[in-house]
Each structure stands twice: as C-alpha cells, then as structure tokens.
Length: 405
Image (tube, rainbow, N blue to C red; front, top):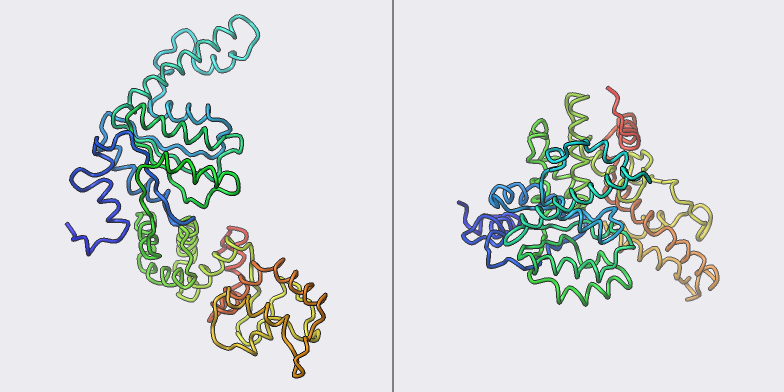
C-alpha cells in the first residue's frame, strides 16, 4: 500500500472514509452524525462520491442501505422524505405483493371517483407504507444517506425544515448522513439560515480540493476513454492552461476528444488545445471567438465597443499597446477602468464626468464577456497554430454537437 506521502489528496480522503482500519463511514461509533463534504463548485464532489465512494461503500455495508438523494426538482419536504425511504428499500415490492391488480392497473384507476378508484388509492398508499418501513429498517444503525444538489432544490422547501429533517434522520435512525455542498451555495436569507443551522447540524467537515491533475485523472481513468490514452497528457496540459476546475466540463472535453478520434482517426496537439479552450469558453461564457491567427491584429466583434479617444481605437487596442506583458483577466479589467479616468499632459481628464460614468457602466455591463475575450482570445489565443478551416470545424462541432468526417 502506498505511503501517505505518495497519495493524492483525494486518495487520502478515500482511504480515511473507506479503506483504513475503522474507516470513518464504516465505524458504528459515527452513527448519528451528519457529515459535510465541501468544495468549490465544479470540483468533482459528486463524481468523487458516485464513482470512488458509493460503489465500494455499498459492497461493504452488506445489509444496510446506502442512498443517494438529489434535491433537484424536489418541491416539498414530503417528496424528499419519500425519496429517502423508498430508495433505501432498494426494490419494488409492488411487483411481488400485488395480486388482483397489476401496478399499471392500480396507477390508472387510483384517481377515479369510483369506489374501486378510492380502494386502489388506499392500496397504493398501503404498499408505499410497507416500502417505507422496509427502507427505514435498512437505514437504522449504520445506513448511509447522501444529499446532493442543494442549489437546485425548490424554493418551496424551507431550509430550516430541510436541515431539521436531515438532523433527525441521523439521530433517530442512528445512520450517517452526508451533505455534498459548498457553503456559498446559499444566497441572501438562506445564507444566514445555513450559517446558523450548520453549527447545530454538522458534526464533521471534509474539504474536497483536488488538483487539476487529480480531478482529470479520476475522470479519464474510465475504460470508456482508453482510446485517448496517447492523448491524455496533451489534454491535461490544455486544461491546466485554463486554470478551470470543473468536472462536468472535463467529461464533456473527454467525450468531444473521443468523438474526434473516432471520426477523424486521430487528433493533433493543436486541435486538442483549440477544442479544449473553446469548449471552456463556450460552456462558461456562452462565447465563440472568431478566427484570428495573428495575436497582434485581433479584433473581436462580439462586444460593441463605444468609441473611446477616437473611433479608430478600442479599449483592447489601448491595453495591447500599453501593456505587452501577459496579465490575468481581472488585472486586464482593472486596466480598462483606469483608461477611462486617464488625464492628458495638462493633468486634465480626457473624458467629462458624465462620459466617464457612461463608459464605466458599459464596462460593468460587459464585464464577463470582456474578461472571456481577453482570456481565451488574447491571453491563451485559442486559434493559435491552427488553420482557419479546421478552427471553424472545431467551432461548429462545439456549437452544434455534430462532427462531420
């Protein structure tokens, strides 16, 4: 077994949760506890749980339930409770316990006003009740429930009530409850509620903070991507250039690269780079950049630039002439703001106060687009070392999802 020094952060966390002696999730002394797995948005928390933890956990729990519950689309606490208990049961007992009527027949007539409809409705409730009781039994004294997608829960679900239910689940059933989220998922009133209730609800915190390489390798190791083995180093290199940690986009990138290899039979390094950079820009910023092969003559027409210091010059060209060193998109945006307040040789402002405010408003309105154009168009130069025809084919593939031979 590798030493602790040889393990990655995610491997150490997995070992602590599942593999070491008295592993945290398998130790009955931790029953009744609520655990928070916290990390930045997109860092792969869900992927880690579903692919690294849950499969092994289900094998090791034996007769106890391991339940994953997404809060996406849940409109009430009642829906969440039903999902927990029915999922814990693990099988549809209706198929074996319904005799006179099949499940389809019951479902079809349960809403009827006729006596048979009312009886069917009562029958469905009875069967659900049996499934719920069996689910509860599988959770008691050692079962595990994982809640995810808090940011997608309905506003109809009160956060106080939800955390109250979670806390009572852990305590009353003597099971372990895992909450996957980042504390900044809640806004405004809910943020204040979460700050208050987490101190009473959460017993243990785990920080999920993988490196770009860790997250990529955890996804790319799937046998699905074996055809990309010769390209994975170049894919990872391009991902690192973006400094974006996002599991969902990594999966999309690997899928796109795999399709390119299957259709085109190979994927050159410059194609990999352009495909990856433009995929990030499209997914994160909803932008596709025009082809420009020369960094010194780039003029992107996605954002309409107001004339500043003369119609012939844009804010971008001013930055380009003044600052040749590579700067981050945040520093770049600050420099744009500084231009607005520039003064001439007589220490007089180049723009009137009302003009300064107008341009400042325009900057903030287009902030995300301007930063994206700087990062992917200028700083990373997403069309570098690639011919226009192939670049346009990449862009079309990203926009339409269709790659032609």
